[in-house]
Amino acid sequence: MKRIFHILLVLGVAAVLGGCEMDHYRSDTMTSAQLKDDPASAVYTTDGNYSMFKDLQEYRGTTDSGLSYQKMWFHMAEMRADNVNLSGRTTSPIYNSACYNDDPTLKHGKFFWWIAYKIIFSANTIIESLPEGQSDADDHLLGENYFLRAIAHLNLSCLFSRQYSHGRENPGVVLRTSTDCSVTERATVGEVYDQIVSDLQKAAQLMKNGTRRGDAGYASYDAARGLLTRVYLYMEEWDKVVELADEMLGADAAGKLDPDVANYFINARTSKETLWCITNTATDTRERSSLGSMYYSPDGTGGTGWGECYTSDPLMELFMRYPEDKRFTSYISLYGQKNDGKKMVHWPVPAGSNNSYENCVAFDVEMGANGQYEFDFSGKHYVVEERIVNTYPEYYIKYEGKDQRVFVRENTDKITGIRNSYPQYYCSKFSWQDGDSNLSSPVMVRWAEVILNRAEANAMLGADAKALADVNVIRKRAGIPEMTADNMAERGYQEVIEVVNDERRMELCYEAHRTFDVYRQKRTMDRRFAGVHPWEEVRYDDPRILFRIPYDEISVSGIPQNP
Image 1 (spheres, rainbow, N blue to C red):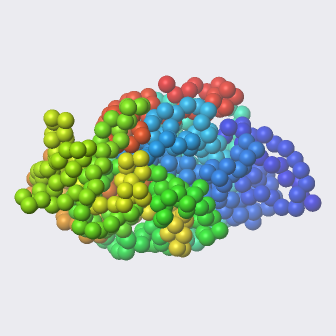
Image 2 (image 1 turned 30 degrees about the vertical axis):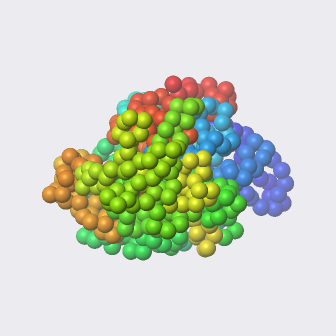
Image 3 (image 1 turned 90 degrees about the vertical axis):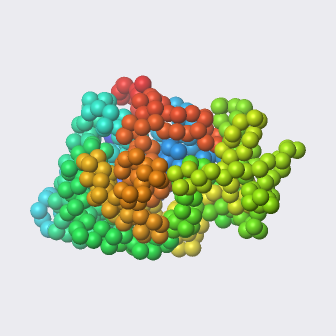
């Protein structure tokens, strides 16, 4: 019988060793010494590292149905932004994320910190034990672990530290580059990013001559380089972004994209567009505990999915400029749509608590004899005025003596199409893999992002024509008109970077980019739209942006808390 030391990472920083008799090694708990004794185990240990991104984990003696890296990452990252509205108070910490109301005892922050460092520790066991240069296959395996260590550090930094563009010397996260956890201190943001760059460069070097071991759930040479374009972008190393993306994309950027955008996310594991995703199979379905459950429910009742987070009005308006946009028609759907020729109208009003806003909603909106929408609401008759703003229609009514912008949508059933006054515009990017409404392999890095990374870098370098060319590669695939230097001004854009930002928002919505895109550019997040979150604008230097470092970590290691 072999002797195994079970590694328990306490709070992501301290390794506690204990022993018991077992016939096999758990793939996420082997020590470097054990791996050297059994080199073949590096394969299944690495596979165990991947599994920690998707599997439910036993944490503090329990296995909570919602505790997985993939779910916590996407929810924590996305709910800080302006693409999603949460339609009601929930016992899930997703509410606290949406309201910028976190504290260091909440389980989502504690779990994510813990599981991220567990992944990093396990990757370090491979990095320390697998000699470089034995074979292309072994080097590729080693490179995969450098990649996993890099993305785990990057995502921790995005959530718990200021963006790199706010200053290299700001406090970062704990940097772990070995299994020695005897010292715990916060590195600077610059030190963390320097290590991430080094790890991704090393990962690419090691994987260059090898072959990806399976579907897009395994890291690869291009996955490492694709993630590196993101890191360079965050670091505002514009020239490096362009140089690397040019090398990767070659002369045919469009050829890197999946032409079937409507089915891309269903087929993410096998699509040529995916550089790296978190692979889930049919056995990994989680029903209402899945990542996509909060964004989608095929029955609209919470029976097969909670379906409590909807597409925000600002994002809807951006998509509705071109209703034929394949990204909109494929992934954004209104539950309960009646299609009887009538419309509904809704507009935000104060909810009376938490400075949040709900909606006034009017159904059975019809076209009047004068060619304008008309409806009755609370005993009054309203006529909707259409105004063309930057070539796109906007709608207004006179409400309580003032001009009030309203949103005109397809009509829905009053019970199933509206929840707590919010239209149920679902997003299905995390649904319908293998015909399961709660199954997906969430995409972490893809070619469309690389193209948009280059577009942003070129815009910042003043290479406007190149930036617009990349934007139009994405727009052409979506089936919407090109944006040019001649037409962008009439559409309300003064600078090309504004065009890039809106295209990036539409293309990558729900994929955990928007929060960081806004704040790293030192912009203000405009969250003045209906939802249970506070109606407010959040400046990029607001201390609430940062998640709180878990109390358990602070109390044990003594590292300083975020302000």
